[in-house]
Length: 494
Image (cartoon, one colour):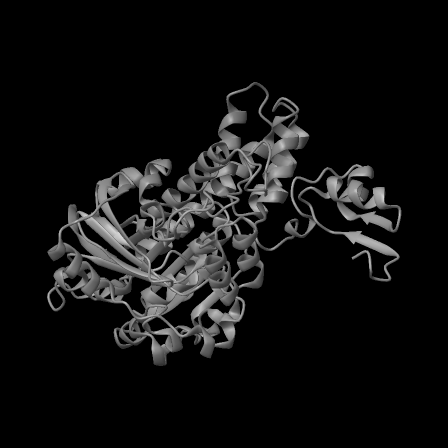
């Protein structure tokens, strides 16, 4: 940067913008403009990057502003309460609206506005309930809470209790602990190494066994929420794609109004990202942090998990006895470095609720067998559940190929954590082989714990056969040009 002919540096970063400005000012070389700093000087206290404050997504940052303004003033200012209620209605957070009204009704001199807002909100909810009761289609909703490990399910108290009244899969495993590859496994049953070419294509009817089955069964399919990079996601006709900071409230509201407009039975995947995927944002946080390395992870996680849990359970009750699936795509990615094949990343929560069945399945449900599970849900007499279950799960992924991520692993002296791997896990053991040929053996201890071990030769033989040993030749794929640096660094370390 010092060698470039630069006169002005514009800082748009929110995280550590003050520190960045201080460093640049010290050089004396540039005029420095700090966008967040200028807004703060003019009385706009930001708790998030400025682009997060946008309408149409039920932005938690906007709602958090009014939430904080009301409760930080003691929770007694009716004018601030009115503004908060307006923001909550616009954000479709009907839980918050009703809770605020109930809270205010416990104090003297209740304003007419409170009673009117409560009345209109309940009328809307009752109207939706009535419409849902007259709807006869056999709809299915899937609640996909991103990045919630199997071992964090109790952080979602309402969903956790619901899991005890469901068909609960004790050993549900993602085949790759990343959202887009999990999406491909769910929709098409493909894996990132074994089906590399297929994994690079947009998901559509032609390459999705699930979409083919649901269309044949007469269902309208939609994935609702943030579908990520369009080049790696699902064809537009199957999505209602939203911004990455779309709130759970907006996703839930969008789903219910679209379902009520549909004449077909619907199969909706609701993908929740904002509240459960780091940085785990919700409007009830006193302080929102976007810096994973600086935040109080436990505090922010518990508050935001509890927030989304209440909203999902609210809609669960609205839906009545419609079949509902609850799942996650992978576990948490907080610790660095940590192998991507760790139990906390691969073992996910998964259960099916229909108001009737209650059972615990101990066999493995691999997410690549999801379409078989859906067939069982819709046609139990024709498709037994056993088709979707195994006595093991496989997992695999290609080398990290993003230049930024490759440099991150190298700079932190952890290149071996970013190379390709493949493996298999059974009830008692796990086997992994990485792209360098190094092998790892683990004993499964439960509760997300595993320890290095050395099983007997028969167990090793079975696990290696299940896992496979083939890897991509990254020299033949341009996408992996930066990945080669990982192996160079590993060789230097030897």
